Amino acid sequence: MESHLFYLSSNPRPELERAEGIHMWAKTGKRYLDGSSGAMVSNIGHSNPAVLAAMRAQMEKSTFGYRLHFMTEPSERLAAKTAALCPGDLNKVFFVSGGSEAVESTLKLARQYAVAKGEAQRFKVISRTPSYHGSTLGALAVTGYAPLAAPFAPMMHEMPKIPAPRAYLDGLDLEDPATGEHYAAMLEAKIVEEGAQTVLAFIQEPVGGASTGALVPPKGYMEAVREICDKYGVLLIHDEVMSGGGRTGKFWGADHWGAVPDIISISKGFGGGYVPLGAMIARDDMVQTVMDAGGFMHGHTYAGNPLACSAGLAVLDEIERLGLVENAALMGDKLQARLRGLMNRFSFIGDVRGKGLLTAFELVSDRGTMEPLPRELNAFDRLVEHAYAQGLIIYSRRTRGGTSGDHFLVCPPMIIGDEGLDELMEMLEAALVSFAAEAGLDAGQ
Ligand code: PMP
Figure (tube, rainbow, N blue to C red):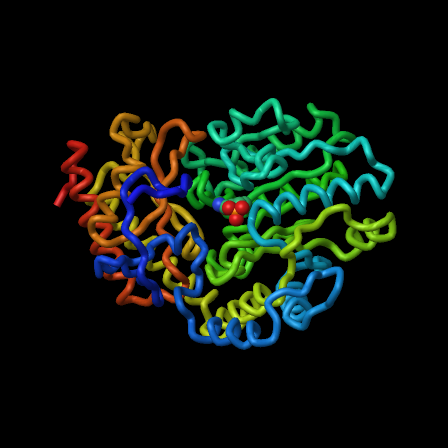
C-alpha cells in the first residue's frame, strides 16, 4: 500500500502492533527489542500500567484546559516536581510539547532576559559542532550538523560554533584536566572573537546525543565552561532534551559534574513516549526579570495541557518508584563493559562511550588513527538493517559532521535487566557478524 506519509524511513519497516516493556511487536508477529527506546524516548519502557492508568483517570476529567484560561493540578504538580529535581535556583518551569520547542524557548528566554537587563546588544548563541538542538529555525541555527541546516542557511542568522570536545578523535586523554582546558579555551576564544558584549549564551548537551554519539566531556571541561560564561556574562544553557530524565545514571546529565546552568531544556524521556511533552526550566530571578519587563513573548498552544502533564507526572513517579536512575547507572556500566568486550572480537569498533544508558559505539577502519570506514559501506545504515533482521532496534548517525563516520546509540529503556541485556548483546553480536561478512571486514571469533 502506498503511504501518504513522507517522514518514514526509506528502508521498508514493519507495521507496529503493540509494545510492552523493552519489546515491540510487528503485525507479522515478529518481536523486536527496543534497543534505542525509539529515539531515546521510551525511557521507562512501553505500556507502563501506572502511566496508562494516570492518563485514563485524567482523560475522564479533562484533556485540555488552555493555560491562559485555567490552572490545572497536573501541570502545577509536574512543575513543582520538576523544579525540585533541578540544581541551583532553577525552579521556574515552562511546558512545551517537544525538544525543539524546549530549545527554542531557552533561546527566547535568554534573549528577553538580556533585553530586560538593558543588554540588547547580546544576541549571539555559541554552540558546538557536531550537535543537535532541534529542527525549528532557532534551534537549527544553533545545531552543528551541516547537512540539516544547509538548505535553510539564508533564512537563519548564522550562529558561532566551536568544536565539541571529541578527545577520542583528537588523540587526547579524557581524564587529563589539560584536555578539558583545551576545549574550554575554544569557548573563551570564540567569545572574545565575536565581541563578548554581543554574546548572549552558550548551549551544549552535557552528555552528547545523536550527533556525537553519547559524547562525554573531558575532565575539567564543565567547570571551565561555567567559569568562562560567568566571566563574560554569557548565559549557560544545557540542552538535556535527551540526557535529562535519568538516562545517564543521574537525573540530569550535568549532575555527573555538579554543573549548574542558567537554563535547562528537557523532553524525550520526560513524556516517556506516552505524550509529546517537554519543558524549559530557568533561574527564578531570570524569569522574574522577564515577567517584570512585560512578560515572556513566547508560548505554544498545547503547553502544559493536563493530559500530557498527568502522564509526565506518572513517568517521574515511576522513575522514582522503580529506582530507574540507579538502574540506568548499573545497567549502563554493564552494557558499556560488554560493548568494550566486543572490541576484542571486532577490530572495526573504534570507540565505546557514554554515561549510563546513553551509550554508543563508533566503527572505524583503523583504531589507531580513528579513520572512518569507507563511506560507500554505508555502515551507519547497513548495521541497523542487520540488527533489524535479528530483531534489535538501534539508532545510528554519521559521526563526522554528518558526512562520514558511523556511530550507533545503544540506549534501551531504563527498566532493562540482565536478561534483556543478554538478549540485546546476542542480537547485536550476530548483527555485527553478518554486517562484517557483507562489508568484507574481520569478524574475529
Ligand atoms: N535537543 C536534543 C539534544 C535532541 O536530542 C533533540 C532530538 N533528537 C532535540 C533537541 C529536538 O527534539 P524534538 O525532536 O523533540 O523536537
